[in-house]
Amino acid sequence: MIEGRARVFGDDINTDYIITSRRKRESLDPQVLRRYLFEEVDPSFAATVEPGDLIVAGKNFGCGSAMEVAVTVVLGAGIKAVLAQGFSRTYFRNAVNNGLLPLICDTSRIREGDRLSVRDDQGLMVRNETTGEISTAAPVPKIMMEILECGGLVPYFRRYQDFRI
Image 1 (cartoon, one colour):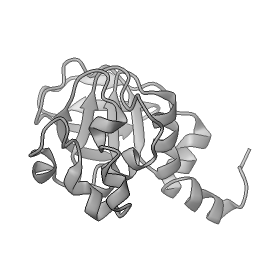
Image 2 (cartoon, rainbow, N blue to C red; image 1 turned 60 degrees about the horizontal axis):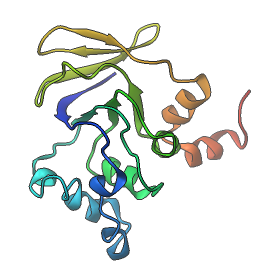
Image 3 (cartoon, helix red, strand yellow; image 1 turned 90 degrees about the vertical axis):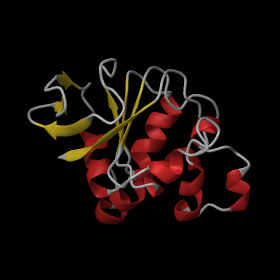
């Protein structure tokens, strides 16, 4: 189970909003990059992030370039999941491959600061602990859940040496 505070964004959050591409030239260290999370949207945002916060967004989260560092910076900030109405295909796969849970669900009624919990009770469920509302997330394929449970694709291959089918 994952629990955390909602940090809400809108539609079409591109990877350059998550972390501007000029920052990856300075460092690829997640602990350095975390200081610049969403600086193009809100320069003070990174300083307010607490480990365990959850990003909540609308449609097309992670659009734009396919830079993997846009997932690295989110993980570096202690965020374990992104809930959105939709993801770009590359961000979704980069998230899974790096151990960040991307959940597709209705986020339209989640507000900034709401307390959320994500549970896998015969399917992924998002409960807004602030309002009591429950939303069912789109299923995540079994192989992707196994990759996420290992912490990403590299740890998965270290453990199993191949895909388990």
